[in-house]
Length: 517
Image (cartoon, rainbow, N blue to C red; front, side, top):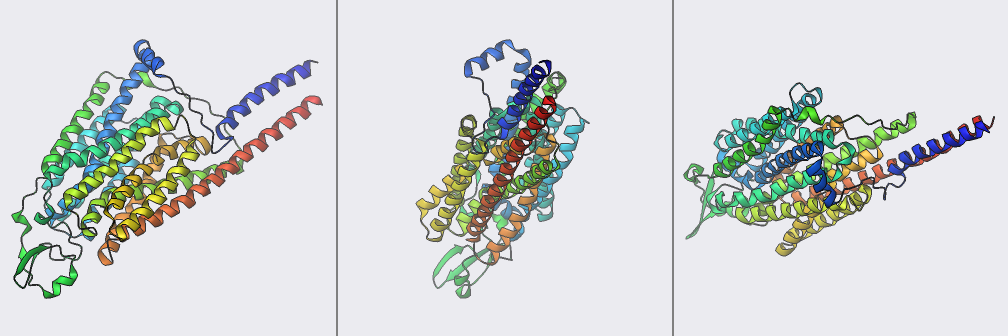
């Protein structure tokens, strides 16, 4: 009788433990472990819970830092042609700015992730130095008139940006653990919000299309070509190769046109300094020491097969994130250049469509705060990945046939479909493969940097050598690859789920047999 009671008790305990494990992965599509507080309780806790109020305050500072990070990201695309004008270089050589930024991003993610985990510096002090240094670096960029200096400063810029991205994501994990999905979505919404505001704030200070050497795709002289045909004189973008054979070509120094891009870059520096100050205050009052999160004992599956599957799933998602980030950053970074070179838009028009794309991106990130409470990460990745595939296909066709309204519609739709995949991919990874700690977040950012490292020089060469339409071809092909990687991850997650169910049943059977004997 005593043995039966003991078995019953053990069975109940084991059943509860199994339910805790299986509930996270019982359905790859529909599982949603998030439990969110309503608005009333949030305000109550802010008013009465001192520790929660400190966490919330620090979270707002992190969100502000990502607003700045997104601002810099959104500002780079519209100003990229003007940065090429400042150093008098071609699209192919100018694409090295993207590559060097990514190299710095990779370096910053590795180094700052190590400093963050080892606590060599106080985490709030580290955040202050990263944001403030980011701002100072941005302010220097417009004054680098030499190509080599411009390349070097973009490495430094990327280092600060990668460090900020890594520490921001890891910092939120430290504060909230697995219960901060809504705050995590808000963090990435702030990034998108900054990216939509920046092009609008930058546009008034950009030079008109005919006052700059924006499209030097086939120009190796780094200057304007003043083309004269018969009695009609006009300023021509060098990409019009067919007219060059009948034109008298003379050079006009780009130095005759003054760039004002230093003004929005100085505003960006001021924004960085402003958002860095809360972290300096937190460091001075030692806020971080009171927010150490207790370690939670996770139920681990020690089977070698499960471990291998989890690693395989994690690697799949790391590659997925790398290609996804490459697509998103390339689309936003080259959109203005593509619109000017292929569609013959002005720089101002290119800035507006970039801003609209970021607006849709920000809208999707904002809605993602609520979506994560309703839909499972697996289903959200599938739906938004499919939308991204359709939108880039539509953008390709609309650009090919010069359907302007189609270009606008599908650019906006592409921005919306790209919005929430990154944070949701992190949630899906934690739910099915590995817990997203600071180290895991750093690995994701490193893989993202490596993925984006290849795209700009490859795309710049393809657009320079063949046609600007390779902007559409390359991104669409990479989106197809994203879909294949998603299904590979889904298959791996399903195998892990089935393995858990079988292991739970076997262990219960063995326990029952031992008790009966």
